[in-house]
Image (cartoon, rainbow, N blue to C red; front, top):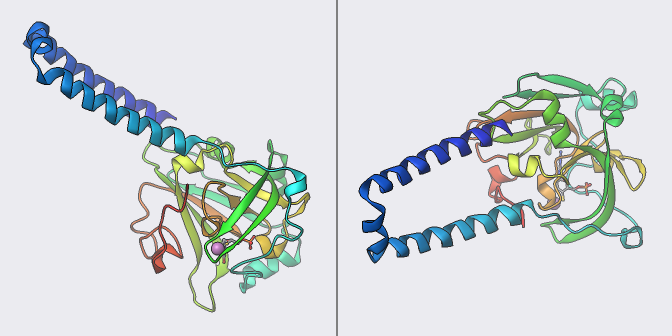
Length: 256
Ligand SMILES: Nc1nc2c(c(=O)[nH]1)N[C@H]1C(S)=C(S)[C@@H](COP(=O)(O)O)O[C@H]1N2
Ligand SMILES: [Mo]
């Protein structure tokens, strides 16, 4: 992505400036002193730790086979949004539903279900873990979030994506929402799913579209998506903690 390339270049330029300064100070003097190799050693250790963090965040979640599928993929949280706009959309089979993608993007857009279905798709059989103590294995089909984000072109300042949902929570005016960083947003297994177990995504599981973020816990995987917003910080959104449950004390990072 452009922003990270730019910051890497910035980092390199400054690192080289440092090396240049060391050269000016005299290489011999530096390499003969006893502290210099030690400092290098610490740097090496730190970069190994950083490397490990990066590779583990980039690793794939386990995928399963058809034989592992749970007989029934249960519903949790909202099973049918109590929202008149959503109910009207559902009554017409989501023909008029559109996903809005905006915020820090160069080309804000709206996508119909048909448009999303026409994009390249990915199917994955994965295990869903809910903090309430249940798991289920399901087969999900959808479009990679990275594909959609490429279409709208993230601005360099964008650091998170926020998912805005249709369902109000227990009669409260506020609706479910969640957020993830770009590492998770651009991960190949992060998809906007419109099918579960080879069938149209049922309302109980988030129709017409829900996100799958396979290395994260269940509550991150927003159902009933209406809008995806790219932001620099989620501090100013709602309770400021990046999600409906996070505003009530859950961890923002719910991944492995
Ligand atoms: N919009 C919305 N998304 C949501 C929820 C919700 O209540 N509303 N519940 C979350 C929780 S806690 C879990 S475990 C999963 C449940 O997904 P499922 O209904 O497909 O089992 O959705 C998550 N996403
Ligand atoms: Mo959950």
